Length: 129
Image (tube, rainbow, N blue to C red; front, side):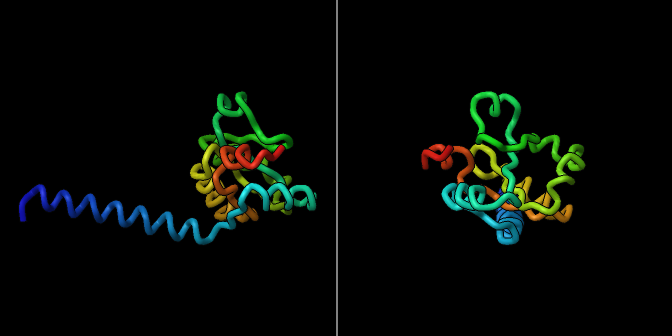
């Protein structure tokens, strides 16, 4: 085997490992499409939305009533969420990727967390307020 073939195999293995890891993380998290989330929020006081985008993104637009902790600050600000420990926390970001990471982190810490599929992009696309 040549060096380039070995490097290609290592790269392919890394991609597979990352994909499998994401698959299992994704499998353990509840996912709501925007309409389901909006309905759940409307019907229950035991649900909150957590915006994990950057402050700049939040200034541009946000979902009314959501709580904000950027993903990069989540670990150090986890105590702020303790008051929501008995609620379901639906995380959202721009497209649903960072929020999936946030939901997985919260789940590891014992929170009841979920992900908003498609993030605020799909929320807006569905004309939800």
